Image 1 (tube, helix red, strand yellow):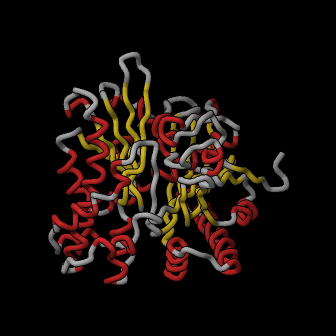
Image 2 (image 1 turned 135 degrees about the vertical axis):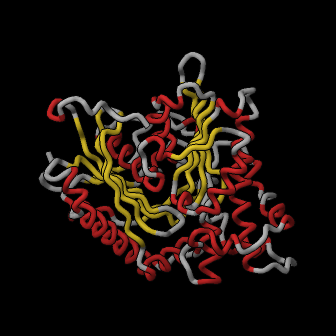
Length: 403
């Protein structure tokens, strides 16, 4: 990713710090990124990660999959999570690495995605719900908080997701390594996998396509938690001990979501452990073989979406680039399978090749979205969410002393 020219005197640069906070459907923890912007380029970035306490993770997982909520329990969880976000952000600002980079410089605003507990983009009353009361974060940090980024998109008849492509199309096209590409694909491996396809036109215009491709880590994490009581499959070791079952894989890939047209988005409401159990009926498989098959399910569902888009062009694989990011990059088995499967489609890279830690791409995206909301800048998500008009994403609250 292209950074701003660092040769200029910092005092002469219009530098602004924004923070992004992201906790995805994989439910592993909270990613925080403080990003220094120079215009629309990243000048600097500081990151931090806090793992969810087991009790909070379990409560969030139960709520996300429960068909109904107890009002009191739901309200208390909303506040409990809001306080946890505030603690995470305070912990981050007290880190030596944060103090060394930012110190007493002003943090303009924080973009907090919240924890998705329901994403229901279809029907007459489509909605999305991210929890974590932002007022506690505002009080603790004495900083404007931007939140609820998806609801306005849905009010404009969009899917509410994915939103990260807005950040991808603002930054990646300027990178020198990508200027000769026909297609640049940004693949994010969170709980759900999503792709942004940047089509580089001869005219210099960038056309953006994007969608969720299906599960990345969510089923892998749910299955390993059920059987090993671990929050994730460390280094892919458990999955590597099993073998992919073709019958199960074919069943999983028959889900109608994969043939649905874009714009589309999905979540653990659809791809969850109960759905997996329904696909396992009449199959006598070891737990390890199921886990191994889930790895191939993630890889194939990603590849089939990328192939569908790239089949529209006659470009060679060397002219296309795939940039991989997200928490799934920590899993060597998943990365090995993806690199092998995608190598015939494009040159496979990491967001690290563009000075952006793969695990904090989404947190950086919500720092950027906070900047857009802070300055009331409208965005256009029509190509990937279906929103019918440009919109300003998110709500914003401010502490009492802000002008």
